[in-house]
Image 1 (cartoon, rainbow, N blue to C red):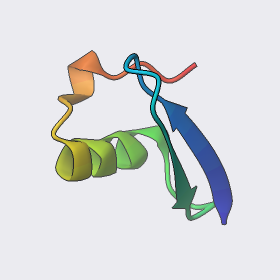
Image 2 (image 1 turned 180 degrees about the vertical axis):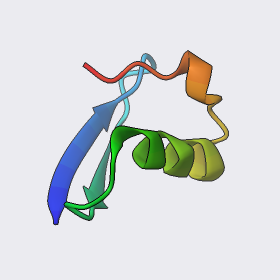
Image 3 (image 1 turned 120 degrees about the vertical axis):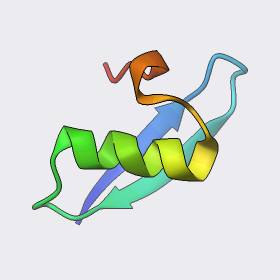
Length: 45
């Protein structure tokens, strides 16, 4: 498992564990489903 920390513009942060076999698209789809953030508005840096 890989662990990512997401930081939001509001200053909040949240940790996610992602399977090593998952790709970026799958992770963004998960964020869309859990946080209601459209994929086209997500920026991973």
